[in-house]
Image 1 (cartoon, rainbow, N blue to C red):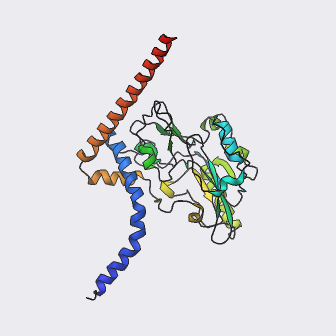
Image 2 (cartoon, rainbow, N blue to C red):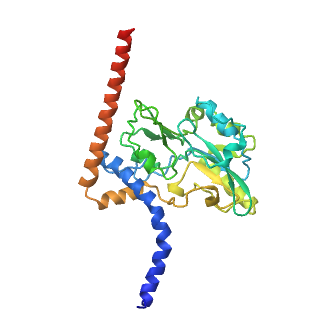
Image 3 (cartoon, rainbow, N blue to C red):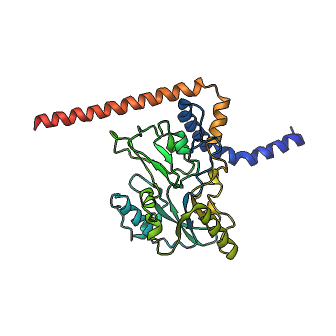
Length: 324
């Protein structure tokens, strides 16, 4: 039986939405994580404590120009040394790491990947925490282990973390990573944009080490102006878009690229609004009993297990001393 014109029109519309529906699963899971973290604490708030928070005025940021990166991995080495991270299994001078796409891991806060684009152009991309202006990780964390600092970086306090991992689900860039080897000390690891160095009047390590000037440190507003100037001066070099100006409500880490951003691994489903706005809609639509109690008991269980693990560790250490 033939379909009416209205049915055909509706099917065509649904087909066009198919991709967006699939991509929205990540946003849905992120909303659940945000809702779980914020429901226990009350109405979700902006990272800066204000309903109209849009980042701290005058905050610092970073601008990565992918057209200048040559894949030397100097930034990786500098990050490793600045944060006292373990030596990598593959030396920083070994280009074989580019044979597969990498992501950050516990003990590796930044990585550089190589992409061969459809047009035959080779582009290198540095990956690390993007330090969202309204970070989903901070909004999702029920105990405020994450803090959006006035300087710009999103700081993480491992002493507060009990391992719920809501931040990992909420992050639209898949950045926070969980250290599963520290079962007695739950810990999430990520770049903090060298906050200590910034407060000491220094550049973040990766920006200071880059020999090509591909990573620039400065005030976010100044970096946006610089990025626009580069696009205007060399329109054939860059895509006419500053990634991070508006994505996820704005990032303190900005990017310029000579090719479309999706060709170098940037997620295409990141909304322009802060992720917390989706959680607010979710909380308004779902009766609180379905969110608050599961989240509360889940966190209570995690906190109790965390305490029990600490006590077991102490008892084990005490027994060891007695045996000695």
